[in-house]
Length: 289
Ligand code: NAP
Image 1 (spheres, rainbow, N blue to C red):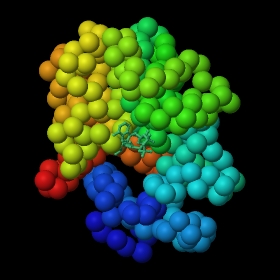
Image 2 (image 1 turned 180 degrees about the horizontal axis):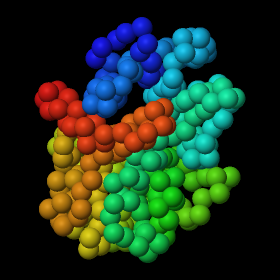
Image 3 (image 1 turned 180 degrees about the vertical axis):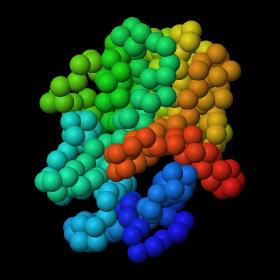
Image 4 (image 1 turned 60 degrees about the vertical axis):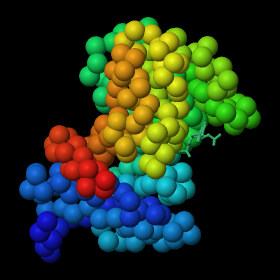
């Protein structure tokens, strides 16, 4: 990277932010495209968010990503928020427009991207999401965008599950939502054409765990898709077991890369080298082992 007097800035705000893989992906894409940009990680403590945004404005930063703990907290600072981000209730990508800072949630685009390549009649497919945290919200909006027949949500706490389901009342989803407790998982699995792990079960260091046992994965419909949002390890135990049962496996690197590519396209207003971003991410993950 050649930083000069004309270099334009992109970046990510989060706390912590040192683990973020975004600088690796974005700076590879910037280098491959030969652009005079740099993507910088900024550690911003929660109490400093307002000052940080004022600083990013004053410094002329072109756009930035927001990660934990700022994805919801940033909403009041934005002049415009996309419909998708409003439905998710969180923003991960921010850019400038005439009104000030505008925000959207490219996790939704990232989640949907690898599924859009598959030849499916989504109106006949049911999705089942394990977990009801932040990432599950982007998955719900993504499944709704795909036009699936039904979205099932599996949760372990009945109150939290109910809260999650109720939180969509004003979101104008086109798809019916249905909640299940983990004890009822086996009821839902035989109809789950798309099974998404949005829990941290199976993530480093607990790599031997799977949110669903092999025997239960065997009850998935033919041609089911198992999609794990976890990107380390590759594959997760969940994906390895599901693939053994004949499911199509999609790992979390695809969502991560595609949400990054969607953000970079917004900032640069041009298409970006997705394969290079994927390669940079894979190299970084391989070096972490
Ligand atoms: P989160 O907000 O903390 O939500 C985690 C969810 O998992 C909660 O619903 C939690 O339920 C549930 N859960 C945790 N442990 C569980 C267990 N032992 N049994 C049953 N349910 C359990 O986290 P998140 O931000 O949604 O992230 C979830 C996963 O997605 C993480 O692995 C994260 O790395 C991954 N992710 C990937 C991408 C990507 O681009 N690939 C993007 C975002 C997130 P309770 O609330 O009841 O504890």
